[in-house]
Image 1: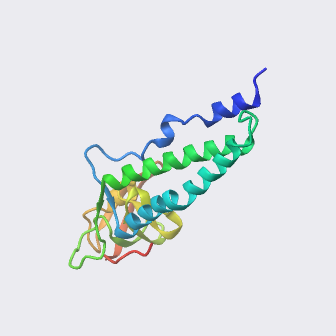
Image 2 (image 1 turned 90 degrees about the vertical axis):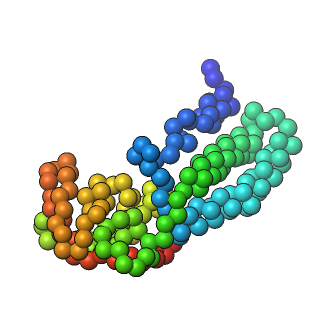
Image 3 (image 1 turned 45 degrees about the vertical axis):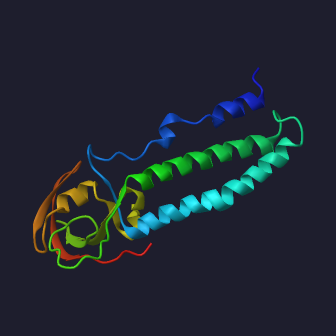
Length: 186
């Protein structure tokens, strides 16, 4: 029979695919808005300056209590420390390859990264979306990735254009009603 500590140790082993970054098209850059870049940077700083040091104190205290194989504070603390370190590595990789693009640029009349687009689908439903980086996707706030099917269909179109979107349910036409480039709040 396996001990609880052995089972916990197996579960705590890092998974290779947990550190994997969302796929970017080959040769593509990791575009991100200034607000998104700042959010990632703040998360790294918070992990490094606050959460990780507090957790290291808890682990040191738990280790000083003796037998580590049955010490839940120690086992769970070490697991959480690995998760934090993995997240820090992931965020640092994303920040290294990030190309910051400010969406507030005047005079652009086509849909590109950073655009806020209002479109109408074939059923007459009007939607407003902002095209952002993969690390900033937030569907409830209307923020979609620049490599999503909708963003790709809208790319290079202008106000008044009708574009074709291929979906699993079939082909749908989207009419661009409005296009603007504004700074997006974090």
